[in-house]
Image 1 (cartoon, rainbow, N blue to C red):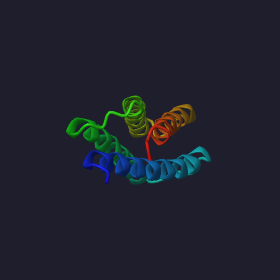
Image 2: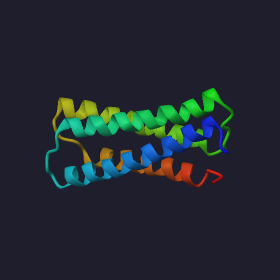
Image 3: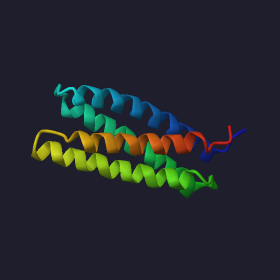
Length: 121
């Protein structure tokens, strides 16, 4: 039976995977110059932050010491900062640069890839 900390990690992984799927759909629509409501981006961002916080919580509360969780948290922190940057750019200019969208997505995929191949399932 897995400990509670492992459950936090697994739940965080599922949330982050669904967040990436939603973000990819939003980015696909946005890259083809179709405007999406900002609420979709905020929902996507909140889900990503919740997944990141659950992952941090799995380390703080318990003994989750997987060597890949710490680098994944670093990538997720960069991803969250990129998302905040995207939010402020869209609030200021109304148009998102494609390069920042792609960097944001690449960081998120790298973080989840690091998590998936680091779990001992």
